[in-house]
Image (cartoon, rainbow over all chains, first blue to last red; front, side, top):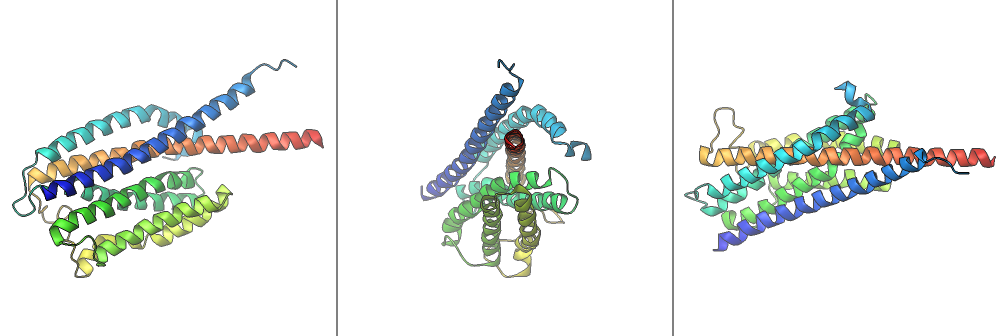
Length: 49
Length: 244
């Protein structure tokens, strides 16, 4: 029973760290990809003036 | 290899690889976890042996990622490879994450097995130093705004810090440590039964793929950042030119 605590905590900590790393990476990727899309969309847009 | 020194070519390849690598990684980690929880209890450690299936692959990855970071830094600093510093920077946080996992799961494995969370023996201390080197490397990128200068300074730290990698690896052979010596990478034969060896190798492959999948995303993000920076500088120059 005591050993289950250490196993659970080890896997829990690992999933948390890797989950946070993945979420942070994915958020930054999507954020900058959107900025790039917006920037180049505005470059391609026809100038009305 | 040098073909992909061009960021645009690299982006094309990365876009094609990202989803398949994530898919393979999820399959590997799922199979690895199933095998890890199906492995029999060890006659000495009981079920606690299951911590090995995350602790050992994470430890391997912490050394692998640092070696990768150093080689990328050499490419950036010495050969002026345009993606060298970007590749190193993209790997650093992932390496720090794996090293942190190694330290925490090591402590959680050490408590029931050795009766202590931590001892200042050569292996544990050198892994802690590795974690601090990762943090120092990341701190340089945060502190210095100019990417060229940050790349140069961080590369020097990465290359000097590499001296710690063989110390981590061979610390258990060079000094008397509480930590056990290598059991999988022994030259004669692995000291692990196949019931434990296979889940360990599948989990290691899963961690390796996870690193590659995260690194691909972080590389693309860094290249996006560079493109935006160049565009902003171009706009500023254009504005100043028009104003002048």
